[in-house]
Length: 129
Image 1 (cartoon, helix red, strand yellow):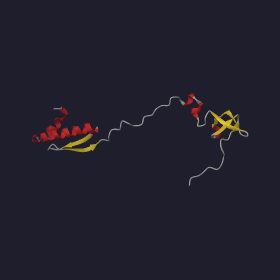
Image 2 (cartoon, helix red, strand yellow; image 1 turned 30 degrees about the horizontal axis):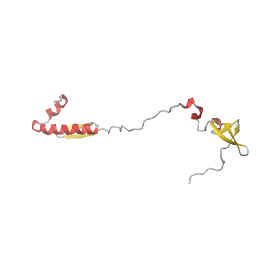
Image 3 (cartoon, helix red, strand yellow; image 1 turned 60 degrees about the vertical axis):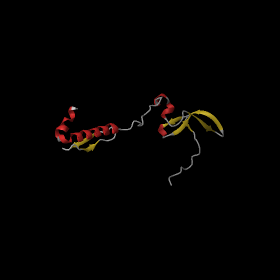
Image 4 (cartoon, one colour; image 1 turned 120 degrees about the horizontal axis):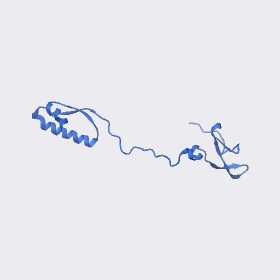
């Protein structure tokens, strides 16, 4: 007999020990099946009642963070939403490669050679309905 169970057998009337053993086995099977801890109360007749039950254990398939392969400070293109190189329309229909950088002082303006480059029409934005 497990020494930690002795207090239960000392408390229960010996006539009800088989009932206590059966309830302890049921409690052990429940604990193995659910993985939860419980605070139990035993009466003089070998009945076991749950007083408090712990939270269920966390599932094994929780999201885990995957670190990026390259740090943002290793490549300037990763530090901004603006791509490092962008095809900019300069003049009347001429397409050239231009170095584009993000200017954080002007809150997101895209600049090349210190001149503004528009990417698409600048119309009024659509608001919420």
